Length: 93
Image 1 (cartoon, rainbow, N blue to C red):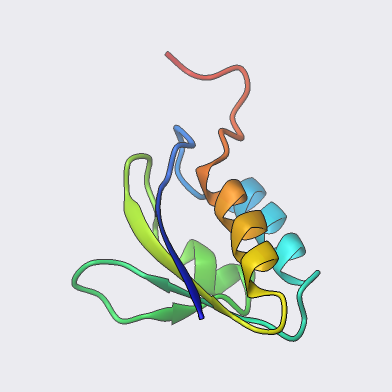
Image 2 (image 1 turned 90 degrees about the horizontal axis):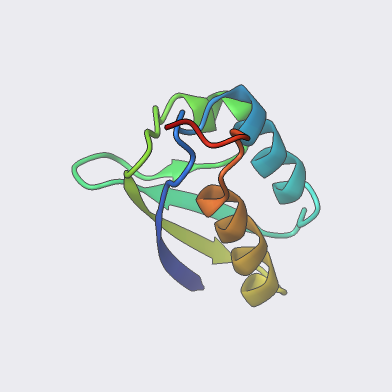
């Protein structure tokens, strides 16, 4: 299992557009399991856009992403980069 702690950088948090991009990338790794942990909350498996949006991730939130599967290093790196990506261009001031 690969684990990485991330910070949400998107100014509007993880709304529909970033959630869609993340889930599309997750679907590229069908043999993998993706779990997000937030302090004080139950772990959430990322298996639908609703499971991701329901987390209510805001800019600055810190999460732990855990990935298991045959190519977990690559899968974790790919999904982690999307969680940390700034989707709202131009960045809001």
